[in-house]
Image (cartoon, rainbow, N blue to C red; front, top):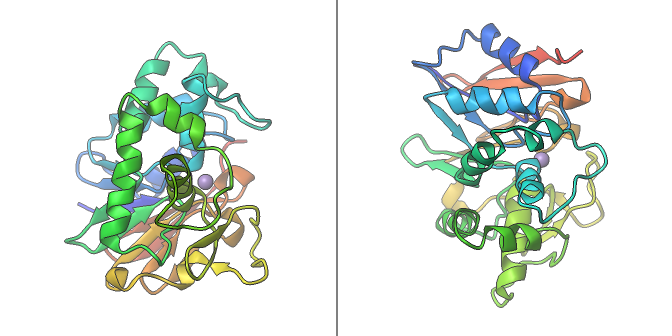
Length: 267
Ligand SMILES: [Mn+2]
């Protein structure tokens, strides 16, 4: 009855299964949390999704690659150079993959265990209550009749600052960027989306160095930032250890905070 959280799988199915074997994961008893970017850039996206969809005890959040896949599948975006999701796009089960992913959350919070999981980040300007409401807004847009419009609107790096008076399209785009693409942040709600390295651009800091007081007692789990490798700080775990870049896939056992690493097995 253990709970494990894994970082960005990105279609690295063989590595995922090797990691689960290493931790002796028991699907009927154990729970798996996935911090998003389940697919893309890696080789086996169909196998990855089929396996995750078969798990009885799974909690995931969507990442930028998952949303990009949905946008392509819905015909509102084109594959980018380096995308590897043609196995999903050409599959007869494509509608099932799309339906399943579109129903998944942007933010998972367990208030009893004091855990929160998001793909990229939680800006310190938002209380936990506000973050939940903003995530719900995105989830409703993905699940409703406006899905295509939401997905078409989501691309872009602007606005780069959160304000209360943003129009609806800009508000949805920046909320999605905070949850699924944030790395560097500046006080007051400014985000910077072009830097991936471990060197902060002038005036910015990694988002997780600040948090809203309402999240003080929570452990936050996130992925997305492969350049940093695993981040372990009090109340914070960064789980993207660059599996798809030939490094490791990481699992965190939430019961005792132990980290398990599986070297990339994709060959
Ligand atoms: Mn990502």
